[in-house]
Image (cartoon, rainbow, N blue to C red; front, side, top):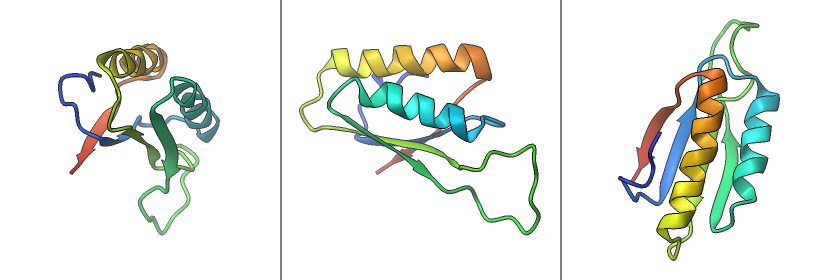
Length: 95
């Protein structure tokens, strides 16, 4: 998961099967970096409740305009840690 290469301002990230509590933990961890805003977004609408799916669609993160490379690298390190434990992040770049 490398956000440094793309230098986009806003991302949406999700990890299949990741529980709400872990998404909240990731968001809290990323907020500590500074110059990054993070929030949770809703899952896609489904008619049937599925215990195997998360109660959240994923996290979004947005970098400040003046975020340096070190900020992007720290975020990538945090995401890599969670990816190693829980699986790959699916990333969507917002324009």
